[in-house]
Length: 141
Image: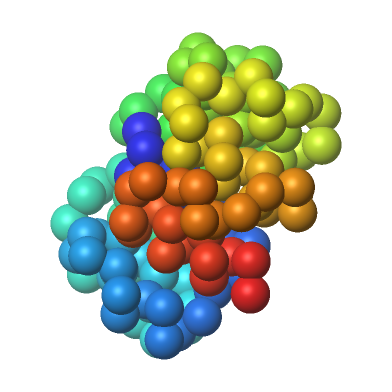
């Protein structure tokens, strides 16, 4: 789930130079693809690749196998509801991103700190996961 959240969070902003600093191959490929400098086809994780295509307008959320990730994808596109997401942290993230909830309800420290940073109420420096911190910094640019 963290991988999926990290990738989707990058959609609100990216910097090509930052993509190269991401250690995870699929996350790096997703970063380049959403920045317009790569292809979703090179992403090995099926759900992440499907999300990439959906975000790029070349695919559908329906291709995402994981129920919560698929519901999150639909909600981000405005075609679904955060309420249908079973995972508490993902649902809370969905609500916070849509302006209908608070980052405070996200239990995972790194995800909560990322949420606060995206809303301008926190710092990427407090995120312990290196890749997530780098992606946060890209989003904040």
